[in-house]
Length: 132
Image (cartoon, rainbow, N blue to C red; front, side):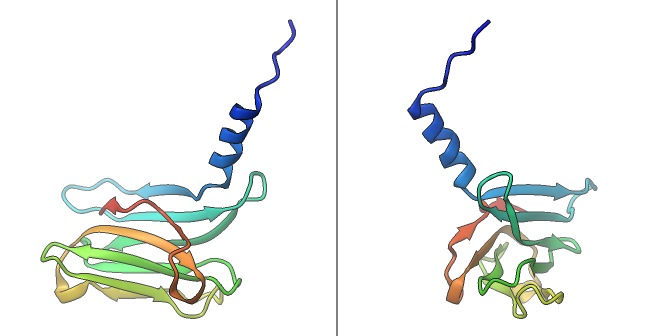
């Protein structure tokens, strides 16, 4: 049986999906709050680059970010809290091994967060904004 070649429109759709930022989820189930994280990947398979990973832990009151690549693109976790607060946690040393972490704004639980990478504070590549 001969396979039909896929058309240029289908090929373009596949390449567009491959070039998009890919996010992954890692959660551990628990009653009530749970730890949650997202990773930001860029590139074309098989050369995907895991740029950063960040998330929430400790009953959604600790926010963290780890920049995985020393490439002049900073990494940050943007987050929103139950009382309407908003803040950002950054990883100041690039891929140097240390990560950024802080307690949530006013000690309130985080409701949503988003992991982003980009130069000079720009949010060039981001995960979806997800419920914590």
